[in-house]
Image 1: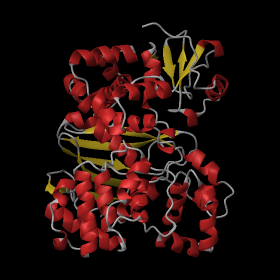
Image 2: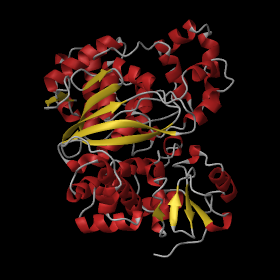
Image 3: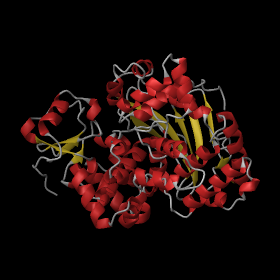
Length: 498
């Protein structure tokens, strides 16, 4: 494959080169620099000597650089950067498709399955991805498989055959050829560079996040809203069960603050998977849980000088919006939590899990069940649920829509379409639909003006709620982060054990 010398017209070369010269980490994952004289591509912050302007091209994805013959830099590991924050901000078809590719949809269902979830024909989706990201779905999926394989090779004791299938490759030969082509190294060479070895039977990875990262605030939120039997927390860590495409699993995340600005920090993740083919899906779901692709400096710059959110953003730099590992679970928990306290909702969800969740054996105390699937909840009698009958009917109706596929919360469909479908269900109002968009669909621009917590936070901070609500339009497109800053003022600290 020959190297291209054509600069990508979607990226301004002068602006990109300035970022490369200053080694600006804020652009890691936003674009990639390919060097014609060396045949490698790097992240913008690569510490190597800055190449001459006439020797570089810029690409919107690692797959785009790979598809024209460049291999990954062994020094800066450009494929290990957080993803582009634009995928969630703009939520275009390309961004939604990238989330599904990272979840392993192409490996499990092919390009046809991916196109179905996004709502386009395979041919049109390929055109969209090529136009926006410089590569089609197969090339993008291949780049993701290569990155997963490299991490597994360097950080685990899995055999190469296990690594190949865990990363999503269909054969050992395909795995070997891809690793050699992308990294200019054999799997044996990559494994020879690693450090210590993790415990047998587990996969330990580091999830890259941009800094600053307010890990403790994220942990406090997750602990406050946890589902008994499905989630547990302790000092500095969070763990939960995972209902993955092939078999159950668990993940434990070590979540701490990272204060330095403009760097890349790492959240340690320990996965226990019954089927290694679920590796990509498990990693992607853990990443979206901690909002790993957020650009905290862009968010902070937007709130700078705002009299309401500005002081909160300076007090807690890098605050994230907690995501989810299962959109259906988030939606069901949201309906259960309508007009009740968080403690009351936890009690009800705990009963629901104990009675209708699937028991699983784990090595983490407190993790005992998978959250009930939508089809299971859809078959229940609303009158038998531990909640008012109207809410029970709303829950069963939502579960039915999730089970039959008329509503999909896998981040494939357009957000506005999902919101309209939710609002069409009896018992689902704007607060519920918007909270689902916030947590399940990773919409960065959600605000809940009727939320009692928002009003209480504003009053406690000495602001007039009416005047503050009027300012909320100026918080676009980051209103979800403004909402989190307000809620964070009310959040109790993480208990020692939960």
